Amino acid sequence: MAAENRDELQYLNQIREIMNNGKRRTDRTGTGTISIFGMQSRYSLRNGMLHYSGVVPLLTTKRVYWKGIVEELLWFIKGDTDSNHLSAKNVKIWDANGSREFLDSLGFTDRAQGDLGPVYGFQWRHFGAEYKGPDANYEGQGVDQLADVIHQIKTNPDSRRIILSAWNPSDLKLMALPPCHTLCQFFVQDGELSCQLYQRSGDMGLGVPFNIASYGLFTHMIAHVCGLKVGILILSIILIVF
Image 1 (cartoon, rainbow, N blue to C red):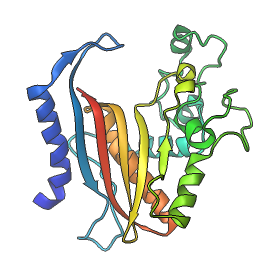
Image 2: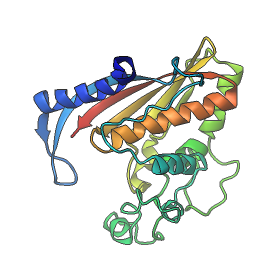
Image 3: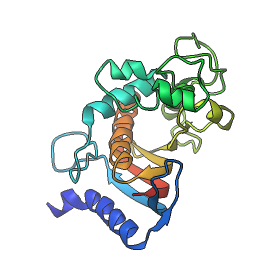
């Protein structure tokens, strides 16, 4: 049992560290946070105790919204930027950022409700393309980073350039919310695919458990497409808030 809970214990220890040594900071919401700079944790995607190729690290300390994790990840992979498509599946996690009131507050008065701008999925699939709205045809425009990641894993698995980035400085001003999980790098060794996620800001009570499961699942999906097993997920959070 101790071995099974070791990964989750990292998360609990990080919360303890934040509560004991974190500092109060102001933030854009006006709520304020207790924060600490820089933490890293590792989660095994393998499962040697069962006759199964691997696991997704789903924390049990708090309830994690599995349907939302799956639907949002598929939404990213499609390159979608319309929160209405998630809301139609009863996944409401982007509704507030796509609301008429919120978009207007950012000056996006000409956008339809739900148009989040060139957020995660757009950067994954069309990095560098000019954003023209969620319904525009972007075929052949920008860099399809996800396709490039898969191609590199298949053809040059020793590469140190297998990187997927959602952080595009030229597009930040067009986004309803700049990316928190900004960049991930994939690593192949001994037939296993591992992933390291760089997260500029992480809410330990809300977003981080979600991100752990999401990128764990994402690594499984890419490994499956590339004919690999799974290794580990490393989460590097730069500014941790609680």
